Length: 259
Image (cartoon, rainbow, N blue to C red; front, side):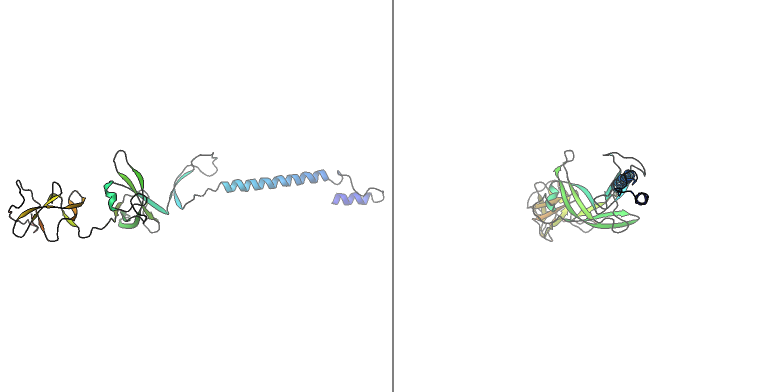
């Protein structure tokens, strides 16, 4: 603008010279400056975009357990930058026998559309015995080829909400609430005879064979869902020769229980 005004003052007496020549008006320099400004703005926009791309956010709340790069380091596509784990939920894999799943609700695996069975997750951390509430979330859907067990996944929400937390990598004990057996009887494992028979002794000392319905077998005890009544006496000690209806002598051990 100053160059144009100066040219106008010097040539105002000359007719037909209202517009100064482009070089006098410095139009090429002005266009070059405008082009450079546009290029600088494009570079700035690209730099801001590149800066934005250097900020990597995970799709979940979590913690970084391993960093593979540092500040200022160049990275390539597909290069692992860090290892993270989520803190919103923790999952615990529990291998279980196929028969055991009858007693639990496993969404997507056992019958029914309800939620999974509740579970208590217990661990000792920071010198304290703590318990977290969890739930059976799902099963992995196949038997392990080597162990013939099914992995059941227990889900615990917000494991880091309290301190000390249910930290990842901690050894835990899981107790799953199963189905209830009304009027179930629990007897020693040694009291269950072949073909699911129990030897029952009445008040007169007569031994009879009684068929029972076994619900669950454990190494030390047996859960019965039918066949015994409350208060009935059973034989827990071995007898070399036994017949149905024979008379037996009732003895008591040091704990006061019938043997």
